[in-house]
Length: 387
Figure 1 (cartoon, one colour):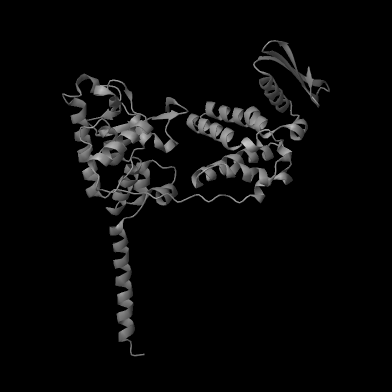
Figure 2: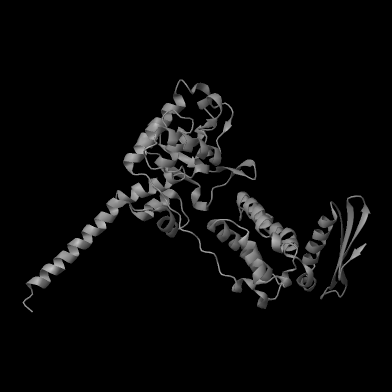
């Protein structure tokens, strides 16, 4: 039997463990709080279960003195995230990304007790991460774990090591958007290609790639000229899955422009597509589209290969920036930014303004002309003023 200050584990048979903890006395009844469970797994699983049980009985003092960063992540932090998934408060793909990222970037501190971690440990974790975006995300994920450890009392609030670590800068992404002329060339270049429906829906309706990949033909209302967005198709950790929209606002009915709607109907009813286009995914991989639905990474790869083959002399606009291009064209055509944000189904206006809109040269020239007019008028008045 392996004993700790409070709680113990005992191997009853191979892979079968008895876990016991004691949580002091119940303040109402005065009886000692005892908890015991039998679990199957490794010794590490038993130790993690003991930690969870100690948290249940409120024995924070024990945990504060001995739990390692890795034990806290696996036994407390991630299980809480799984509960959030069940309540619909956290996305499954976000959970998988978070769990994978933590186990990769936190190796230097994984077996270090929380109360022994220093700012140097955190910087060592960041040093092994390549790329500014990856470092920024690693810092944010570790800081989220640390904040919960502080909030839940696993470490004293005076031991916030992240105050001594400089936050990595988040690089501003270079977003290459397409003008209406270039977008027309892109749509023509992909005419008849397997990913054409995805390209059409992203460029014409501002859909995310995962949302376009998740569309079925049944989502379209041809009489009303709309498409219903209810899910996205993702590939996370090697597994493909349907997930709810990114935000509450993401699930919506979107109006399809007439030129896009007409072409989508042609694809659905074309003799080449035939029966397979009557239902199911709007775009499929493989010969004659009979194999599987495109997921974002495979659609992106197919798009990139065909784009560079068909438009070698044009600036490359990646597939996700078709959504950005849709927003930019609307803005430069005089559409109100609030309506653009609503069409993109963003949670707030700031997201549209800061991350998705890139005014082109025509908008900049208009601003220059407005300033030139105002300054010219002021100069003319000043020159005519006798004083």
